Structure formats: structure tokens, C-alpha cells
Amino acid sequence: MMKIPIYQADAFTNQLFGGNPAAICPLEEWLADETMQKIAIENNLAETAFFVRNGAGYKLRWFTPEFEIDLCGHATLASAHIIFTELGYTESTINFETVKAGILTVKKVGDKYEMDFPSRPPIPIEPPNGLVEALGEKQPLAIYRSRDYFLVYETENDILDITPDFFALSKLDTVGVIVTAPGKEVDFVSRFFAPGAGIPEDPVTGSAHCNLIPYWANKLGKDKLHAYQLSARRGELWCENKGDRVLMSGNAVTYLKGEVYL
Image 1 (cartoon, rainbow, N blue to C red):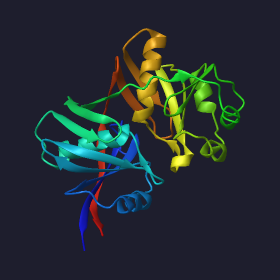
Image 2 (cartoon, one colour):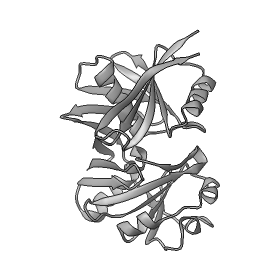
Image 3 (tube, one colour):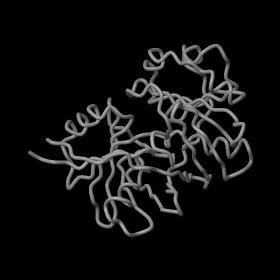
Image 4 (cartoon, rainbow, N blue to C red):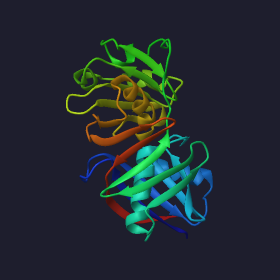
């Protein structure tokens, strides 16, 4: 029998049961892809992260309950949190090597973790049939796309009022759908839906902020931004636009640690 360490941490929050939960499995070497996918299905969280040591840094992969994904922010932050707090890492910065998103760095800055991710500005598109209708009666001000569809609404209340048709959204040709508007207390707010990836509504989505940060930096004429993701668990991010990169900072708290028996 093989025993794999497993941790669960809540990312983009300083409160247990807030933010976005991710499972984290440190590995000596990669498991079979099928096995990692089965662990992600069993965990039934938005993301399970796996990493192996790679010189001074780590190689990192992320799995939703449906498939391996190209980029995940909250599980990267959660992985860094576990490396810093549980695995005896003493440097101030962690380098994660990923297949589809290149090198991602996470730096400990005070009580927060600052992530350096690629910027993915969305571009205007004509919406596919059914997209707007699947999000309710309110018409968006604009519709864009990067990896995900990206819809801009007028007010924070518009975002809170959205009641998606998850079955309709699951048929779209993207990982997910981002909805966003100016915030009442922060620069911008958002929600993220990805039913096709097995995640009806993601509590806090780092990869979505790779789109949100360049969009709102341009719209608001400022590079430092404060954001809320308005899920039931709610997340808070401090963001900075850096041209072809974006910085996202947030807290994380450990929920559990244990072992997977294979």
C-alpha cells in the first residue's frame, strides 16, 4: 500500500470555511494521470493540486473533478501555503514550473502570498447563442473572451442577482464564464461558473483574475486594484497589473491534513 500526504486549505481568505478550498498532494514522483484524476474526483473540490520537487522549486499540476486544467490560482496559492507552513520551506519565493502556464512564482509578503501569473486580457466577441440567456434576463454591457467567456455588467447587484442555467452553461466551448462589474466597496467584483468542469460556481478563481485585472486596470486607469469574488464563501484579492503579468495576493488557512491510501 502506498500512502500519499494530502492537505486541504482555504485560499483567498483568512477565515476557515471561507475563500476557495483546494486539496494538495505533495508527491515524490508523478502518479499515473488516471490516478491523479481519480483522486480529484474523490476529493470533489474545484481543484486538487499535485506537485513534485524540481531542483530548488517544484513542478505543479491541477485537476478538476472532470479534467486536468491549464491554470489554477487558488490551488497554486494553497500549494504555496502548505509548502511554507507544513514542509519546512525557508526561502521567501517558490517557483512552480507548469506545462501550459510557464513559471509561476509565489512570494510570502507579510501574512499574504503574492502570485505572479500571466496576463490574459479578454477580447471583444459576438456571443454564442444562449450565453446571455443562460445568465438571466439582465443584459450585459459588453461580452469578451479569453480562455473563458467574460461578461461585464453595470452594478454589483447585477452580479449578485445572476442565477445561472448550469446545464446550458455546461454546453459552452470554454472552461467557464466570468461575470463582473464595478464594486461598491472595492474596485471590481466577479463570479465564476464552470459547470462543464464539474464546478457549478467556483468560490474564488485566480485564473479568472488573469482576465479581470488587465480589463479593470485599463477601464479604471489604475494598476493596483482590490477585488471581491461574490460567491457564498466569498474571496478577497489584492491585485496589480504589470503589463504581460499580473500579481494577485491573498491569505490562506489550513483545514486538514492526512493520507491517501493507494
